[in-house]
Image (cartoon, rainbow, N blue to C red; front, side, top):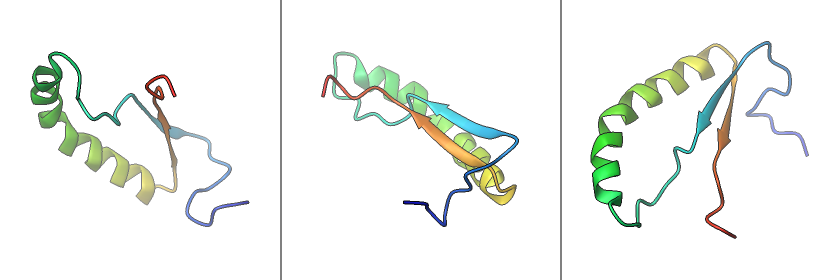
Length: 65
């Protein structure tokens, strides 16, 4: 099924790697505190990519599932 929201052809894409996380692991709170300041910048980058008609690809592990 084709999505109307995501272009299927683009000369460039935004790839976001390992940005979806629940931080429920040892020292996850420390990682979260370091990640939070970056989140607004990443959101702005995603908005710019969308405005330019670029697709965004999320690359994440699946926590062993």
